[in-house]
Length: 154
Image (tube, rainbow, N blue to C red):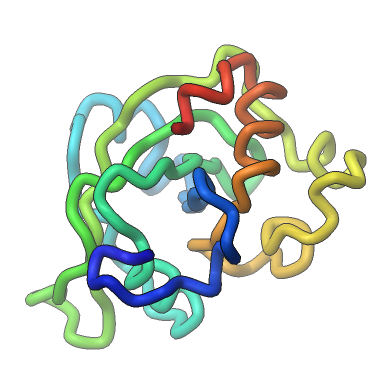
């Protein structure tokens, strides 16, 4: 269920699912996210990505992915505030994210693509999408690859 009480088919019925957000490290990298602590996730205009943001609820785990040259999951954040309007950009919206932990072993896209368990993920199927769902089993497996216990995403 999303924060608004509407069923989210983005995650199916799998409890414990989460999300992945992408950022160019030159524009907003993991270290900036950690230094900020909690901040609004902005600049998203793609309708599908905005739909995913609308489905996010407080406490949901969110993987932080460096796009561009790095192409790897580097950290774990959590939704601090559900979707709300962006007063600066009426075509967009915001969610607040809180940095939680760095992954001890960043998980490279090539590793994800080489592992058949992740073939269904939007990260593999829709590489240009900047906000996407991650089912519970994939979230746990990605956290494990990154050196975190699956409970970190719970």
